Picture 1 (tube, rainbow, N blue to C red):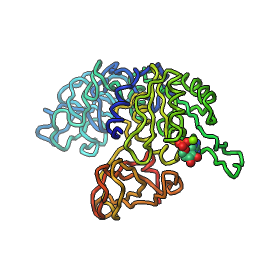
Picture 2 (picture 1 turned 180 degrees about the vertical axis):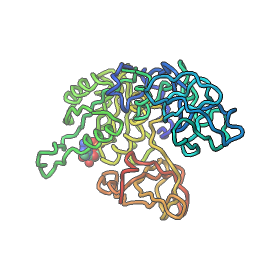
Picture 3 (picture 1 turned 135 degrees about the vertical axis):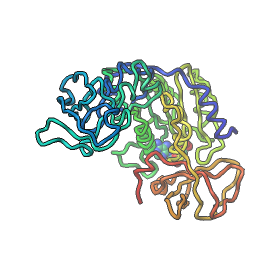
Length: 406
Ligand code: AMP
Ligand code: MG
């Protein structure tokens, strides 16, 4: 049985090439750049006043206070001012171009305008470039301002607007399909017979994909029947990634394996030393990837975050889509049978200068209700059978960690 780390290596060495597309600026939010965007001009495009005040030559103010002749004004958008000479000052507004000849701007608070407004007294000596944003100091024309791989958030959208980029090359989001399997499953709006349950995994997985900004296509429930599973798989293989849940546990695996083999799907692993989620399958046919996740609800949820997210996130162009981790102090003694890395539900909170994690109810990998109380999973290393209260453990933050409250 391979370890979680080995499974990740296999996943990452089987990533198909990412596809790209051009996207209009208006719908680029959240997308990831597949090209470098360079400055199409200098920013600022001129020496720009950073305060309201007076533009002058700093050498005129060495013996401040000094009185200078006010020769005009420069407003943002009010045209380029003319040359300034020694002995002169120009009234200037924040964001306006500094005139040629001036090398500093004195704040209005440190200046005194005469009552006839023809002269101004500069009260303190000035440094060269004081209160001036030098032309090209934020970006020089041609310089890469948004590198390939950068996610386009609000600030990046502002940069695109600054340089007049109406569109950009971004990674195309993969198309992801979900199939649930099991004779016992019915849809949410149906009343289950005594031997049936509602399909919850498909909706859980679709929501997890939504955190990666992907609208999954749900292809319905496949009965435990080879021909039916084959048909759904074929349909799913029209997309980039297919996620099936259920049907991969010990008793049923042979059945899935037969169908995968029949479709020319190469199974790259079928068992991982993870708890929950041991019977996780990963298969590939050319550019198409298939995940077979266990049917137990927490197993499906956890294996998605551990194995599907790193792959789908990368296909979207992310460099490190893995859920972030941090260390936290365990608030109770915990035991487990060693052999598998366990991801167990916990509640992490900040107290006394550190993160603390309270282990939560864990009835089984089916107990999705218990899992709704969690904001992290804490990681029980596979070679350990006992963790002591007060030990530092690794916490994997759930994707909505910052939004979850108790
Ligand atoms: P399986 O992996 O098919 O052996 O299923 C393991 C357990 O998960 C069984 O108790 C199934 O009834 C349950 N299960 C399988 N698929 C789903 C699903 N889509 N939603 C909720 N529970 C499921
Ligand atoms: Mg099943």
